[in-house]
Image (cartoon, rainbow, N blue to C red):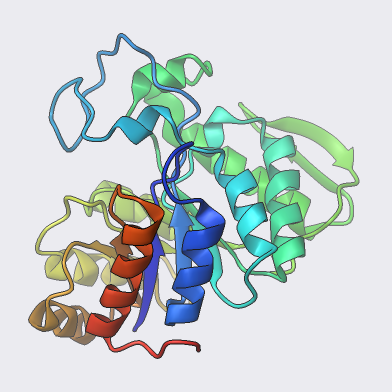
Amino acid sequence: MEFGLTLFTSDRGIRPTSAAVAAENAGFSAFYVPEHTHIPVRREAAHPGTGGAELPDERYSRTLDPWVALAAVSSVTSTIRLGTAVAIPVESDPITLAKTIASVDHLSGGRTVLGVGYGWNLDEMADHNVPPKLRRTMLREYLEAMRELWSRDEAEYHGRFVDFGPSWAWPKTVQQGGPRTLVGAAGNEKNFKWICRSADGWMTTPISQDIAGSVRQLRELWAEAGREGEPYIVVLDGKPIPEKIEMYRELGVHELVYGTPDKSEEEVLAYIDRLAGKLGLSVGT
């Protein structure tokens, strides 16, 4: 089982380059950043954590563009995987987004991970003309179309939301067929069936609890869908409690990811070192 870090990037506090270098040096395997293009001031959509319109963190309205941040990180790191937790692809043009992700994957030597969400902030998505009841269909088409662009010399796709004829588009991703795609969502049958059809694995939400049953259900649905291997499972964990970590290891979770505090650069760097020590990681690997 591997360990990753997620940084809620913003235009204040520690820069993602500094945090990612520290994470790589401390022995972490992956570095994730979130995405919100903007936050409408007046909203009806409830935040899954607060249950209302209030947001738990000011940085929701201050996030950096995830792929710009990861491109910067790729230039100062060499081994750590670079991912989103999570991106909202349907808020971008799919052809342009495919080019951006392929470029970051190319420049990083094939280190990108595409964590995606259906999108809880329907008000934000409405400004991008995303129909709320069809956002899953739209996301599926986006992923399918981007994989065509990443893998075929002459790519084309014809769907309801994405439609283009035979086209040339380079660079291709270093990773054949595109980066590993993880869906960040609640652990239920509907989401798992979607993952089994359209993604490579599951990323838990920060409020997910008691996931043992969910992990078993996902693996059963994966096998029933005829998928090879097993789904890649990433858990967004809270505190590094040894008994809990061992439970995740026994469940066969592939990766545990920990958040970083909203504090000064010095404090965040110290936290990363302490966390690495608690997890038994090898500094400088």
